[in-house]
Amino acid sequence: MANPLVGIFRVKELRERIIFTALMLVVFRVGAVLPIPGINVQELNAYFLSQANSGNAIVDYLDFFAGGAFSNFSVFMLGIMPYISMSIIMQLLIIVFPRLKKISQEEGGRKKIQSYQRMGTIVVSLIQSFAVTQYAQSISRSVENLLSMNIVPFTLIAMLTVTTGTMFLMWIGEQITQRGIGNGISLLIFAGIVARLPQALWELMQRVRSGDLNLVFVIVVFVMFVAVVALVVFEQQGQRKIQVNYAKRVVGRRMYGAQNTYIPFKINPSGVIPVIFASSILTFPLQIASTIGGNVPWLAAVSNVLTPRGPLYNVLYVILIIFFAYFYTQVSLNPIEIAKNIRENGGSIPGIRSERIEEYLTKILNRIVLPGSLYLALIAVIPTFIQWAFNFPSSISYLMGGTSLLILVGVDLDTMSQVEGLLKMHHHEGLTRKGRLRGRNL
Image (cartoon, rainbow, N blue to C red; front, side, top):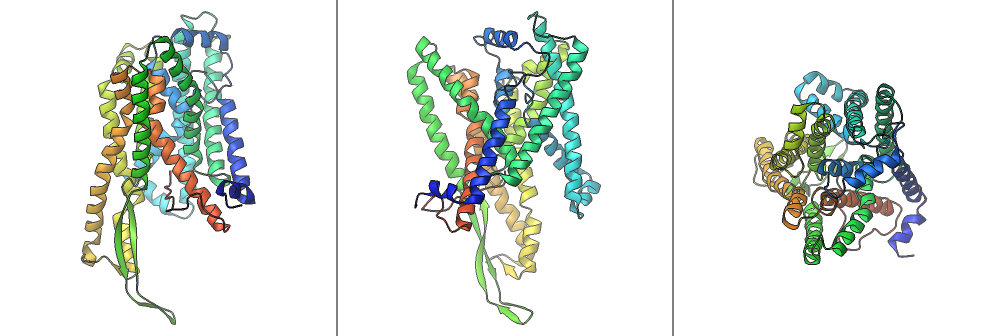
């Protein structure tokens, strides 16, 4: 009775939400292995099996975010990344164009922005799906029976199928957010990473048995893995508390007494959002360059330069993570709005004059975000270090460090915090006896 895991399934609302989320994730995994029309699956598997020894860093990288759906040429091979890319573009457009910002602040404006974002996702998906068809054609030059139909109908059907798959994934993510547990979009990425872990561990064991990898190096990497997980949890839970004092005030005929509270500024206010955004921005040109590069020489050169193992890619990755950490923090924690709310409610920060609250909050946020973003960037480039130092295959290193750890830990903490909140609401014990899980909006 006192077991919180038993309590989860004793609460009807929570039980229904968990079952609904699990069913939606099952649909996602089924679609990840369902090939698009016109692809000979046996020939495709034989081709990627022949490429396994030499390794294909770009395919492994795209598979990482699609949960293995890219190498299967499935209906979900683009994953949810086109939607994330379009959401980044839309947030930037809202800041650049005052008209869009005004629309977003109007009544019903959020639905209009979401409709624009969905239409933009279709455009991005069509562009990426066309690049995928070109990649399939380049493979068909070395594999005779890969395509079972002519080029033109295959291109049209594949673009329609893959774009529809991405829009369906977007719908699944929204349904999970509304009727399930956790943030739907983040959970889809989470499920894709977890689904590839067993295969990666099996491949790791096979390489150790064959002598391709030193067992000592594998143990060292696993120790690093555990240490990074602990550090990520510690960093995700850390926060800086800004004390705020409220004076006595009269509302109607009632007088409210003075109270002291605080504003919790997290060390990493944006969570794993900068990592996901930076990966999405780099995935878009990388996929187009790598899939069409066989036909266009300059795109082939871009693909070689932007390889996930290359220095330029990792430098851009770090810069984008820092940029989106600042960008998303300013969007979600606007010091001007926070200071305005404090003054309107008769609050004050000890030792800070009222007109300088914005300046003080901005200074604190900048001091917090910089080390937090550098920490994110450091963890995100761990896979590259593992590949370089220990000669690990990219399919394993992507899943055992860096981005995958940040996403897995961040999404897990957010989902657990929601579960704990529902348990407390129904007068059950939380998942943890000491402390409280602090979730973040992913």
